[in-house]
Each structure stands twice: as structure tokens, then as C-alpha cells.
Amino acid sequence: MGVMDVDEPVDRVFRALCEGRLTRDDLTARKIAAFLGQTTMVLYHHFGSLDGFLIRVDGAGWRRLAEILEARARAGDDARALAVSYVEFALRHPDLYWLMAERRFDRARLRDEGRLRLARPLWGAFVELVRRHGSARPAEDTHVLLAGLHGIAALTLSGRANVGEAPGADAQVAFAAARRLADLVLPGRPAEPPGPHPGADRAPRRSG
Image (cartoon, rainbow, N blue to C red; front, side, top):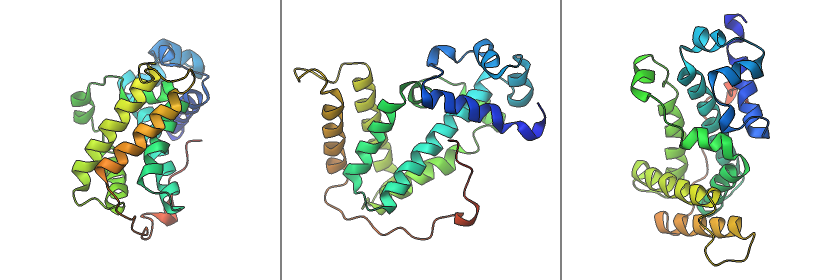
């Protein structure tokens, strides 16, 4: 595999996680290499480590989620609908979401290696969405919203969110909680119309 193909294994693993063909238990160097039809050296040569590879897949997940929320915001969805979309994404792709939000990375080492360059732009995309939906303190409110929505998603995925509700109501309970959280953080503020999309003429290749 040449240097020009370096995005291909990231894309393949990302797609497989999205589609349920790989699970969190498959995210070891040996199992990923077998899935790719390569030796484990493909990870270490191009990405430095298993963490270096998986942080790229993690980034593809956050990029996909940001794209989904941006598209829905541009279609006119309010903050409550965007909050539901976040939780819906997590419930639809539980193993990808686990990688994105729960797997522990050696971030200090990844930062030293220059492998977290996309983290700030991705974070900025979420902050901008929150700002456009009426936040006077968008960075702070983004922290609150993402923490709260992650809690809702994690409780639902663990089966602990549905207390006393009818069987099968887990998702509806989670969506109601997401809407309520959005109301608390961004109460009654209309969304601003989106401006020109940054980099619209050079939109990144979608991962799937």
C-alpha cells in the first residue's frame, strides 16, 4: 500500500463500523490488519501506532456527525431537532460512537506526534452551530450540550435510561431528554440563517 492510499484503510474501517461489519471488539491491531488483508505493519508504518490509526477513524466519525447536523441546520432544523439527531446517530452506530466518545487514547502522545490537527476545526464546527442557534457563550454551551447528549446516548446504549417506561421506548425517552436539554441550554432563540459554507468549493470527500 503506497502513501497515496493512506486514507483507504481509514475509510474502510469507518464504513465497516457504520454498517456493523466491525464492532469495538474488532478494534485491535491484529483484527484490523486481518480485515484490511494486510499485516499490522500497515498501521505502524503509516499511522505510527494503533492509536494513530483509530484517531483518524474517530475523526471521520465526528466529521460525519458534524456534516449531518450542518445539513439539517441548513434545512431549517431547530436546536431541539439537532439534539435528537446527535442521539440518533449514536444509537444507530453504537460501535463507531464508542470509538468517538468513549475509547481512551493517549492524546498527549498523539498531540506530540501532530495527529490531532483536525480536532480544533471539528470542535469549531460544533461551536459555530451552537452560536447560530442563539448561544451568547457558544464554546461553553457546546461543552454543556455535548456532555449532556453524550450522557443521554451512553445511558440509552447501556439500557439504563429507560426506567419504568414501556419496553422498546428507550429511543423515545432519549429523544425527549435531548429536546429538553436543548431547551435548557438554548431557550427559545431562533436560529440564524447560515452564511456561506467555509470551503464550499473544496468540500472534503465524504467517508460514506
